[in-house]
Image 1: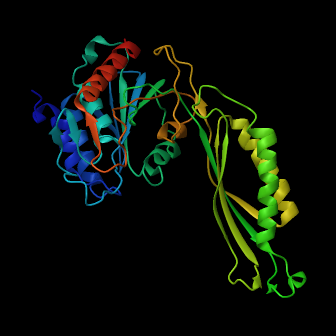
Image 2: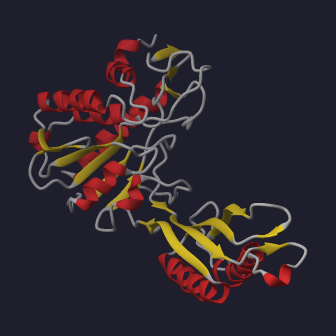
Image 3: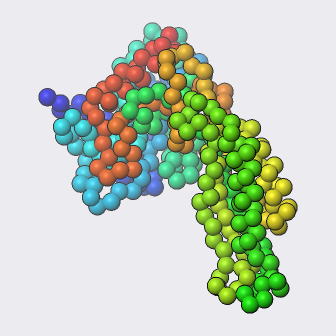
Length: 346
């Protein structure tokens, strides 16, 4: 019969309230103390923690410590509960389960028998702004040759991810009374015409290119926000539009940028980029089947010098009420991590 004591590390991690990084310091100190006892040394520590062991680190693992908020229906958010072969707790899936499996796995590895060492990264602010990963990248961190990201995948290795580019577009018109619209310039109408031409370009030039390894095998376009006008009887002088593309190729971002510049000149719009992250797709020998992520992870932010693998627990119940993972998935993940360390660092 399963015993909750087998999952002590995960139980300890779940106890920390890391919603919006509230107890970031406490969880980082816990992880550092645990790894120090195994012989790891602290390389870097702020709200982010970097630990290493051995020489010439060839593999790295990265996990974010923060979680989303929960609603009242979640019965035991900070107390890991075992029921019917499932472990319930806030972050159990996303992604304290992945972090616990990393800590469990490294405790089973005899690093004295390996040629190469490893690094462990623990970041903050993933759920809101990727602050921890951007901090590492900004400090020009040299990530190891192979990087594992512990996001929940139900034990499937994902070796690619779509890119993301988000735009904020502001249209300037001229206000007038709706009874005499020719005296004004409608920012709303300019926005509509702009979007119509953009969608036509997207359908004819971007969407037609495919990459079959992605579940949705083409770059997608979404108009997320349109906000224009102040009164029903006034020609609107301002309109704001926010759009995003989930890209399969970095070249698509260049093509979209060029088209947006052309349209902004035509329709008197100001275009600014909110976020721009390139897609990635690795060639890795460790797995037979190629699978990719439809969601955005920190793997997309660290650059292409490392081979990136997204691999974590399941079922994928991230951001759900009564978030949970299965005991079998957790145990399997610990073994997967252990095997990867031994294989890459041999």
